[in-house]
Image (cartoon, rainbow, N blue to C red):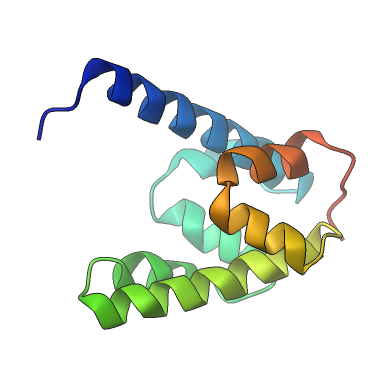
Length: 118
């Protein structure tokens, strides 16, 4: 599917902002930042930063490729991981909702803000 150049640029900017934030967030957690750039592996590490087993991150990714039930399961797992991730950086449930709805804003807040990994 071909995208309008403006839409493609917006998607590219979104990806750059979020991956840059993940890089910095990984470093705050004591993980090498480049690991944020590797698909699937970055979700494994994200789950581990949240205090969950790494395979749960892969479950989240793989469930998105399934039917409606798989998508719902992926969203539930994503809520669990993001909730624990917010707690790991000293944030609450409101921040979890923000990471789900506006990741382009809330991940950079964790990455470049004053929050520290606990």
